[in-house]
Length: 324
Image (tube, rainbow, N blue to C red; front, top):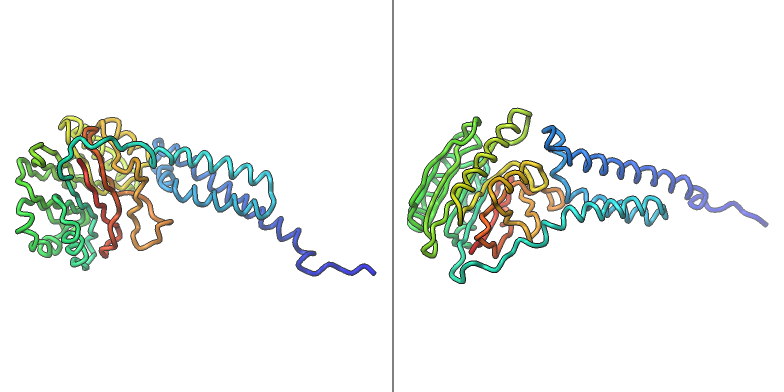
């Protein structure tokens, strides 16, 4: 005698169709956002969509799994193809970029961090410095409170260039080695400070440029950020070998301006071969962060270590590097 199927079976078709529609909606959203981000060089708002390629890859992989469970062949093909395209765009960040070290001597150890003007946890930063014992400390968003808290470093790092400010654009550099140049510079119309320093490591001169341009909160700010980064790229190229450009660039490796800086400055991205290092916002899980803190360097330098540091109370994670 025929019986009606259980409710779960009876509703399986409509539920599957409903979930498939949601999956397609999300797929089209990811596709539209990724495509729009590729045109970020033409409009600053579109550039904001270019920064999330890691998230697009994760979302597309999740959608591929979803279409597989839903047994949607067309969805599987579409998301599979999309995932291949996104991974092909990300692959160069995880391969190449590591040449044999130019020197077998001790590496130059760097710690960089945007410490956050509102951050009161100064001790975590001091603990990181003492644990890593870097040759150079480079910090952004330094105000008088931060400068006073780091005064205890004077014995280990007697060579300093500090420009504390009450806004988010104070900056500072602490170095073990004597500075041949240690100057505060104002490059670009934003009138925010950068630092140019030159010192010797392993009897070779190294130029370090530390900067923190404006965030791209509006069209004018984006233009001033781009101008500052382009100027610094030109200066880095003019300084020649053994040059480092480091800071919170307020952009990611996926943006057009980042590629322009690399090309103009004849620079290399320290994250090549290591993969992008998402640093912001530090309080969110890794999957939600984007890499906006960077170290670029001339081709004669090799990065042998790159990683994000622990939470220091800031909305950014620090970067820890070794270069030879």
